[in-house]
Image 1: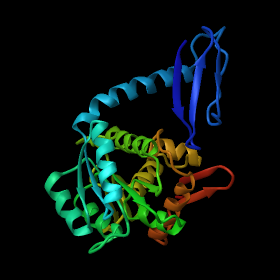
Image 2 (image 1 turned 45 degrees about the vertical axis):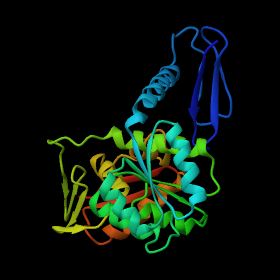
Image 3 (image 1 turned 90 degrees about the vertical axis):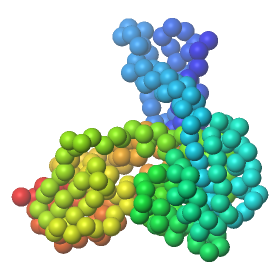
Image 4 (image 1 turned 180 degrees about the vertical axis):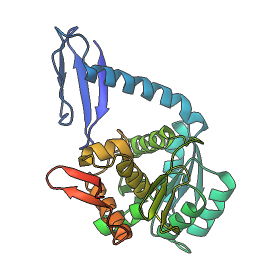
Length: 292
């Protein structure tokens, strides 16, 4: 008997069990539909599950060389997190305050940062800003702050994910793997095009946005979203489609993060041009529309 697993948008583990050659059942998987394949051969969904399984196996082989930096002032967090992920095969470094965290980041050049918000000397928001000035390495906020404002601010400053305390180690491990996969998906190419439209220039390779020739500060995920929409002008994308295309298939967060990023983009792009616009298609999603 064979099994496959996926994690859906509601963060529930979905177990797929093969009872016969051509039939499947599924548990709590609302995002995908499974079809009987008796007459048409293997379904596209089964192929996707098998590809995911292969990716999970290859992932475990890569973790040995992955370096994580944990920045948190609470030893009851840093010590068990360090022990757990070292047992998972990661190399883990720790820092107990914001200043030490920045110093350690420069010194050890980690592949991923786990970052608390409330810390002495420099809080997590300040640390995130400084890291983003020198690197695009993924950052996962790990905080007891549960308000939407704190989550939105963390993501807007350049965080890639946000996990609230108390947390489960398996969930945190899954989020780390998902973030690392998303970051490894895109490898900039030398010949990657820059999108140039009226009064705006978007370079995904350099992570730069220019408005009327002037560089504008923009978090990486906002730029990726803008680049994707602008490179697919006049096409409407749903929130789920944007999460898949920009955040990646393995993103475990809320779809509302798309709304937040679109809102921030509109604030930056307000009044820039009358030849294009970032529009909402009510009941469907968003599109980058060329007006002239």
